Image (cartoon, rainbow, N blue to C red; front, side, top):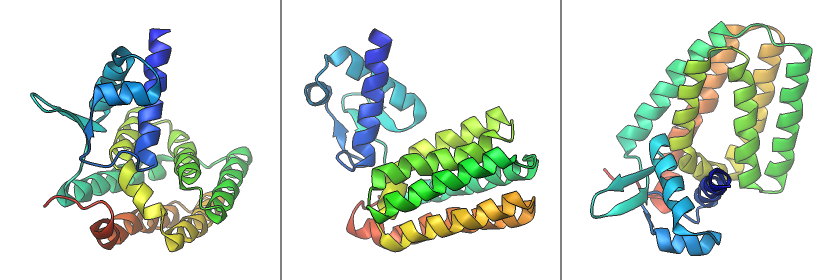
Length: 217
């Protein structure tokens, strides 16, 4: 039961970050979180430790926990790492099965519907599922685990990006292009599409963050 309570608290806190109820750099008060989530401080404390291990929150002695906030340089490095690792995964990827291509197409149609409804939280979840269907098909578990770690620490910034209508349209369009490349076994085209798809986020973030989630430095 304790483990279930902690897991639930982790997901609830993560959801608060996705919805921008908790912003990068914001202090995380255990008492307030416990009251907000309707639990005791014990699962909240353990949840914060788990999120700290992921790099999603940070802890400082005599200060406590805060939502992790990346500097502009840290965000740049995170996307550089993603680019390098995701290219490796795509180049190691076996030809996807018809069932996997259908799954990707269905996920992208759900993303398109969520985009029409401006349901950004749903897009975040479906977009993660879409990409990790591809990544996990590589069988490169250690590399995929590292990619997922980087995704988690940059999720708040992707959320800001997806509040832009043109960004939502773009990801649906580029997902379709990626599916077509994977269906045809066009590995290098898939890498190029993924690079463009991924790099649009940090390129778009500078002006967006200036108005919403300012980065230090």
